[in-house]
Image: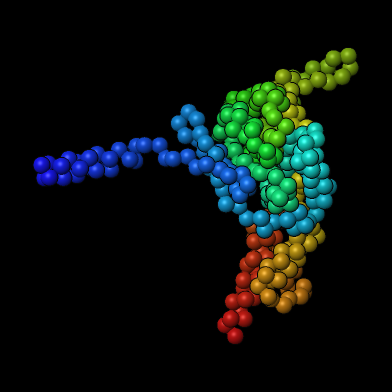
Length: 297
C-alpha cells in the first residue's frame, strides 16, 4: 500500500508540474498606501494592475527652460488633487524635451498628497473603462499616463480613443485623469494631401473631413502643452544643472570652463540633437570620466 501511495504521489507531482505553467499567475494585490505607481498588464481578454517600483529622484526644479509648461501642468494637477475641475492633458513636441519627466516629477511632488500614476500602453487603451472601474472606489487620485501616444495612417484605434475621452473618461469618477505625451500635435501622421480639397464657404476656408477628424482627436484633451527643440543656450543650461547634480552626489569638485562647454556641444553634435535627455546623458558621462580619472591618479 505504501509503495502504491508513493507512486500515486509521484505521478500527481508530475502532473502538477506540467499543469503549473498553464495556470494563471496570481494577480498582485496593490496597497495604494505604499505603492505609488502601477502598469496595466494585458492578460487574455482582460488584464490587471501590476505594481511598479518607482524612483522619485526627478523633481520639478530639475526641469530647466520649460517654466510655462511646468507651471500649467502643475496647476492642473493641483486642481485635480484638491478635487476641483481639471482637464485631460496632452504634452506634445520634440523628443527628449521633458514631457514624460514632467509627469513623473509631479508624482514625486504630490505622492504624499495621494497622487498615484498608472502607466497604460497605447495598445491597451481599450481597457481604460476597466481600469477606471478598478480605481473608482480608491481614495487616492490617479493619473492614467500614456507615453508616446501616436497613430499611423490607416489605424482605427484613434477613433476608439475619441470615444473613451468623450464617453467613459468623462463619466469617470473625479479621482481619475488622463495625461498623454506625443511627438505629434494631433497624434496622427499628417500628409500634404490633407491640405487638398478644402472648401470655401461664404468666403472662409474649411478643412476637409480628414483634417477635421485628426484635429478632433487632440481636441478631446482640454490642456495642450507644447515642447520645442532646445537652443544651444538652453541645452548648455540643462547640462550645467545635471553636471552639478551628479557631481554633488559623487562629491566631485568642479567648475564650468570652455573645454567642458565644447565637450557638451560636440556630444550633442554627435547625437544629432540638443535636448534634455542628451544633456543628462552627457553629464553622467562627463562626471563618470572625472571620477575614473581621479581613481587612476
